Length: 259
Image (cartoon, rainbow, N blue to C red; front, side):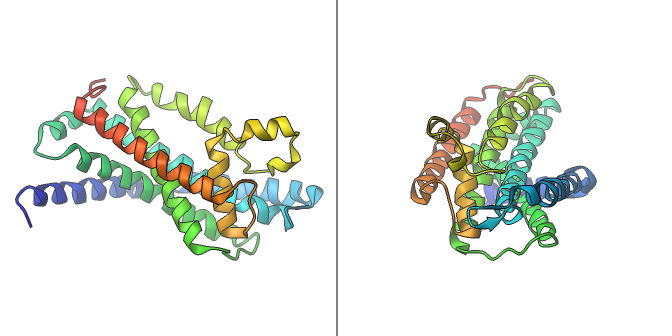
């Protein structure tokens, strides 16, 4: 192992370990609330309202919304983990020590991103297990399911990183989730099929990136989708690459590293 690669590998393992330790140590704040929230969604939307709605896309309403709710939990938790953790490092000035160390900016970025992805996936698994108490799930395409959920968690971890870089105070890290992320998620086909919308609004909905992620994941679980899976996966791959190099450039430039 080269002398340059080994320090970066040690740093990467350390950052990932710290990130995982951080959100598992305070699991009543990081893992329990999304589980409780999703159970409420299952009970209210799936059982109570779902009985009045009936079938959707050839499935019971509960079966239809479960993939969307799993994806919603992955999105919010992968995003929230990185934005809160990296901004906390900025606020405590510890990120400055990491920046001047002989550690590659890519190592720092990958470490924080992996932390967000792992939390998103962990919450996703918890929500999936809880959903089995309310409905039966049979994965239609395992490869698509895994690929989509990992790409989605990665994309929103990187977006959380960008939010943390430009945030100046703790209020700034809640603006994007509240006014951008939440509306996009609720309008992203989690609770309905866009085929129910008028043609104009169906076209407008296609501009929502969350719609493509939710439908691609729903295809992996149920085998149905309102959009073309190839287009959705291509979009996610391109978005991941663009966001990664954009975040790496921000780290290299040092922009926004001071609160």
